[in-house]
Length: 356
Image (cartoon, rainbow, N blue to C red; front, side, top):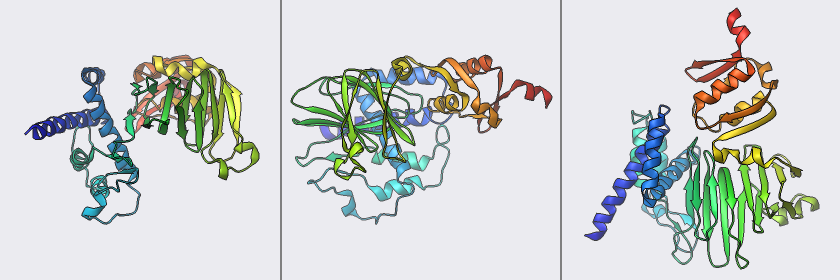
C-alpha cells in the first residue's frame, strides 16, 4: 500500500515536471511562467530531481532520432547488473520520438510527452547495484547551482547536462553538453576529474569553468590549479599532446576538435564568469560572435540580414535574462533595427530599412 502511494506521488510529480518542461520550451513562455517555475523548483528538493529526469529523458529522445532500430523485446529492457548501463526501453522511446506530433502545451508532440512519462526514470546500475551516476541538466536560458555529495558546487549554464559519479576512491563528472563552473571541495584521498569531449580535467583544489562548443573545448581556471590531458593518453597523436598540461589561475586551455592541438593562453575571468550574474561582457568582439553567443541563451534566434554586419565590432554589456532588453541595447549601441519574423529576429542596418 505504501509503495502504491509513493508511486502515485512520484508519477504526479514527474507529470508536473514534464508540464513545466513543455510549457517553458514551447516558445511562448512568459516572465511570469519562469518566476512560477523557479518557485516550484525551489519548493522541494524532489522537484529538482524530477525535472532533471525529464530534461535528460528529453535529450535522450533527441539523441535517439538517428540511431539504428532496436528489436522490441522484453529482454532489452533488463540491464546487465554487472555493467554500468542505462535501463532505458529504447524501442518505445524511439517510437515516441518518431510519433506524429500533436498539440501539447507549446506545440510539442503529445505522443512524445506521454511516452516520456513512462520512460523518464533512466536507471544507471553499478556493479554493486548502486544507482549511478547522478544526472543534472538545464534548458535554454536556465542556470542552476548544484551541490554535490562531497560539498563541491557546480553551476550549470544554459542548455547544459552533466553526469556525476562518486565512490570511495574518486569523483568523476562527465560534461555531456554546454558549460559548467566548478568550485571543488578538495579531498586528498579522492581525485576530482571532469571529462569533456576528448579532454580530461583534473582538479588540484580550485575553481574552473569548462565549456563545450561544437568545434572546441575551453577550460578556464579562475582560482588554483588544474591539469588538462587527453582522455586517452595512450592513443594521443604525439608526444606534445600526450604530456599533461598544468593550468594556473588566469590561464585557459583551448582544444580544437579538428586538430590535436591544445593551446594555452591568458583570459579575462570577468568575461568567462559573468553569465552567473545574468549578463555577458563583450570587448571589441565581432557581431557575428556576439549573435552566436546570445543565441545560446534565448529560444528565439537572432540572425543578421547582411553578411557584412558580422564583421562589425561591439563592446558592451548585455543581459541574458531578458531577450527584449538584450536586443534593444544591442541595436541601440550599433544603430541597428530588429525585425521579428516567423523564424526569429533579424538585425539589419537602419539606413537600409529606410531605403526599402
